[in-house]
Image (cartoon, rainbow, N blue to C red):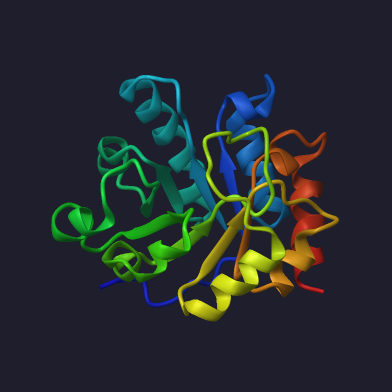
Length: 211
């Protein structure tokens, strides 16, 4: 059973050092929080556990400063060591049910949905939120299966009461449509990480989805 009883987050930043295009990812993260980001996930795919952990420790100092939850993508070791708020898992990672039984009984677990059939499995039941990935195809994540689109998102919304975090090529011009289609929260990468002014980009997104 999921343990997080509420999901009050609307703007979710997925960040990595590479996505920040040479800028200090910690500065980008802090600016995004000041602009209105509610929750941050650190996703580092091509690095060692030690490097991932060191980045997580530094990022958590910032998220703790502002009371922002830190989610770790995939890496259970790092999530445990840094005492992250939670972890996000894909279909090729450790199963949510395994974590619920062991290390992550009281942590948030996010679970990526790539097939409708997943909505009926026990992994979905024990997860706290579902990542709908991708809503629209994106260059930042190429190993996905289904491009859901707005219609797919609406279909998922009718089939589950779980909080839905939509990700995949979401930007200022389509963010409101994604929320209107049933998402509880939008997750972005490049829209903030690549922005000239991450704080302003986050502010504009938050303002748009709250219209």
